[in-house]
Amino acid sequence: MVLSLSPTSIKPWREHQLRLKRSGLPPVAVVTTFGLEDTIGDGFRWARANVGIRGIVSREHLAMAKEAQLGISRIKTRVVSQDFSETGDRVEKSE
Image 1 (cartoon, rainbow, N blue to C red):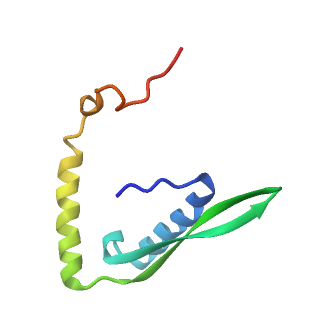
Image 2 (image 1 turned 120 degrees about the vertical axis):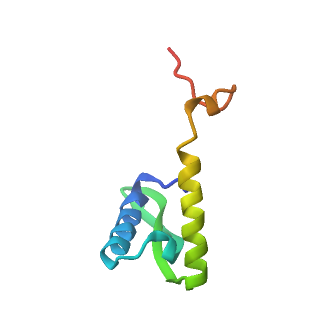
């Protein structure tokens, strides 16, 4: 899954990653939650992502997730820029 975060939400995501790293938990071992916090500052209003952990997955689900993670890693190495060469697949720079 790809999740796009606003610049104001990158820090909470990085903090979540650091918590996992310090605890020795791989990301696939936890159920990660996302929420939105209404934020107001300097006359602007925006939503900031809150990242948390709902729980640790079962051993069975962890084994399945690790297997899927290996499969995805193998596929990622075969993706090349030509896979996105059709019109509309890439943003072209205008001069």
